[in-house]
Image (cartoon, rainbow, N blue to C red):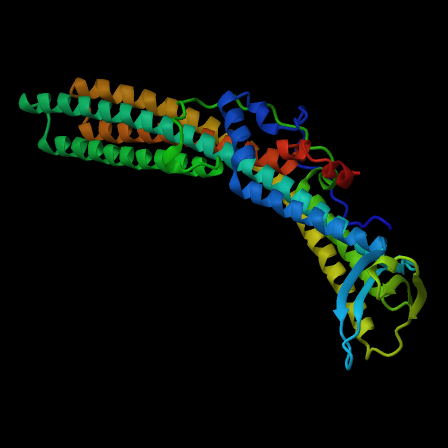
Length: 443
């Protein structure tokens, strides 16, 4: 059987090329021990992933069932009874034993094509499991760094609440001495309450993300052990992207789509060969006696051969060939679409990362300028040279930029996780290591 090519144009190189190879377990690139522990737990305990593995087990059983058609079907029969015929009621035991075997000669390869189709479907289910493992690992990493981001923003908000409370005390003292207007106190109180409202939002977000992590780890949210507070890791260097077509040999979702094309091709081969004659052999041996003790003395043997050739089926066989050919073409176009989406995911991740780094640089500059502006305005306000509204606006802007920077850093990590997910190949889980059939399917 010839290899099948995706119906797409030859792709050019990706927008950028990194210098570091992608590790099989890509998340270890972050050198984050907590992340490593969380993903190990998810790959072992996640219920959705366990269900995907059982689906693969079912497909293995289907392959074994299909292979059984290469061997004869053998049946044994034993029967005994007592007869009392009229009129004298004389009779005796009536015992019979027999063995029969039926075997279809796979002259045209129809049975083997059916077996190959099931094997390719089993491969597709295996790659589906690998793709699910990749998804679970990526979702775990994304939610972990969202939790880190929410914890950092919550800690920052708590600091900002304390800062705003201190400023409120300061301006109230100045109001008592007639140095500030009542409206300035109201504005500061409004900023303080707004900051407290954001504190509630981030407290809620921390809890919700922890609940999501618990589900990924296969545990009830209320049973989740406390996760320590951590910081963002240093972003690893940009990974090697390689040639675009290398993705088809690495990514499990692309290998799954390709296996489904091959399975559809074998289904079409079965439909074509159903139009050819089939040859089968039937062998039976039987012993019968009215005396159980003499049952096995005499045997009768029968060997028969059957040739069945389709003549007139009202176009049903040709229609089945057309149907399976159309399904094969459908799978081929779906494979091509999956490949195109994979290329787009890599390109999107590269572009987003490059632009996100520019955005972070810009935010850092804005934050630095805002902090300097806020410092100068505070000094001017204390010296009676600036209205408090200017100080308030500068303070609110600086605090928002601080939160925006944390969020941008988390988004950068999420983009990198997306790039790893788009580029990385499969990795073995404990289930795969323990199962021998996987080695057979990968050959």
